[in-house]
Structure formats: structure tokens, C-alpha cells
Image (cartoon, rainbow, N blue to C red):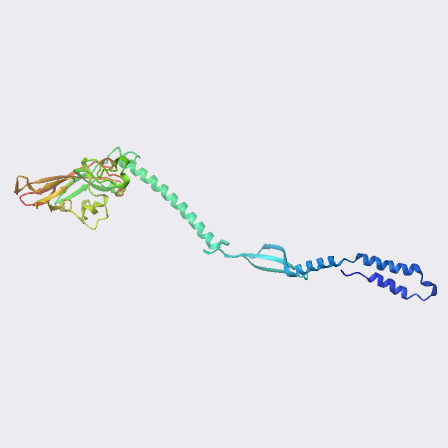
Length: 339
């Protein structure tokens, strides 16, 4: 540590300036020597000097220290900061501005960009609008159910009416405009005996050894809602194979042969499948004698249930079943519709 010798130097200078013989005395000389001792007492040890030197070296190595930090300029993608620093070695003060937090990306966290806030607000507004539309749709569906069925329950308690006629060889429906506008779709039912196979998810522990469900006899669904449609009041039937009637139709036809498919049985005789039964197109006692056949069908309108979601039965329909028939004309060996 350096010693301040300025005052001692002044005393020595005054002492040298003395000219008279008696001016130099033991007291004056002792005063100078005492000042020297006092100055030496204020000097640090070599250990103190070493510590101070290490501290100064540390300041030099640290470089700068931040003395003030504030929000910088506005930017759409980054966060800027204004900072003031001091050089720990020289004491010099400096001010600067720069990026403090970069924008966020898919690879790193960061500041949200202004456009992301715009997109987030747009998405929030879109969700709010969508929720409002869903509520409006729910209210409309409830209102339509009340108009069609007289009830808000899923199973209608009051059936709407419509009529079916056969005209020019076609099956026509009347009075269905409101049903179609309300979102109802047509279904075809057959009066058959039926026994479906179990689906694995339908099985209970007691059904593990069973392959088929219980037998049912009565009005059973033909295909699905994809198996039939109404165009300009005329009923059209899917041309898909029997196993594909649950899928969107590849085409439609208005003829009765779309509902019945003649095939050869094991004996090579013409027959048709009818639920779990097989119907021959001739007299069982005389294979050379064809016979007239009348097959009972019915049409009804209901909600558009997805295939396999629920068992579609007449009680789920918004209307009563209205019957029509497919008839085999034995003499002419042709098929036609009838009421």
C-alpha cells in the first residue's frame, strides 16, 4: 500500500531551510522522526497488499458489471433491453441496447411473437363462434325432434305420417318433405326371421361359447341407412352386395330386383334368401311348376344412425312403417312392386 508522504516532505523542507545555529534542536528532529514513525504505522503488511492485489486482478478479469436494466424498444418478434455498465478495472461507464430474449421457435422456448398472439386471439374467437353454432344446432335439433315426434327423447312417442304408392312400376312416397328437411332418412325393413352373429364387443362372459345372437322374427332392418334413398319422391335401392349394404352405395336402382337376388341352391334350383330362410321359386312338390311369391317390405323415416352404432328397429323411427311388396309373377317369371 502506498504511503502519503506529502506532509512529511513539507516538514523536511522546512527543516532544511533553517539557517541559525540554535534553530536545530532535539525537539524539531524528534518531531520529524515521530512523523516518519506515524506514517510507517499506516502502511499495510505484505499480506494485506497481496489480498488487495488479488482483488484488483479479479475486478480486471470480471470486466464489466450491470448497474441499470430497463425495457428497450418495442419489437414484434424480440424483447430488447437497455443496460448501463461500469468497467470494474477502469471505472468507465457505458450504456447500450440489444436483444434480451429471442423469439420462440419449434426448437426452443422464447418470447411469444406478436403474430402468435394474433393467431391465438383468432383461434379463441373461432372456438367461441363454434360453441355458439353448436348450441344453435342443439336447439334446432331439439325443436325438430319435438315437431316430428312430439317428444325430446331419443325414442319417439308420437309417429309422423306419410304414404307409399306404387305407380308406373315405381315405389313413391308422399308427405315426406318435412321429414327430410328435419334431417330424417329412409330405412327399409323386411318381415323375416333373423339371427345375427355376435361381435366380440357384444359378448358377455356367459356368451363366450355362443356364435349367434337370439332369434328374432318380425320387421328387421335391410342393410343400413345407406341401402336406400329418396329422389324426387321415388324410392331407390342400393346395388351393393348384401355384405356391403352398410357402406355407401356404389349405385342405386328403382327396380324390385335390387331387393331380391335369385341364386341357385345346393340342388341347382332357383331360390332367394329371406332372412334365415330360403324361398324356392317353384312348387316344392313340382320343380317344373313356378309359383307366385309375395315378399313383405316396409319403409320408415328416422334419424341417420351410423351402421353398427345402435340396433335400428321400428321403435326408433320417427314414422310408422308403411308396407309395400315385391311380387314374383310366376307365369311371366318377372318381379314387380305392389301394395
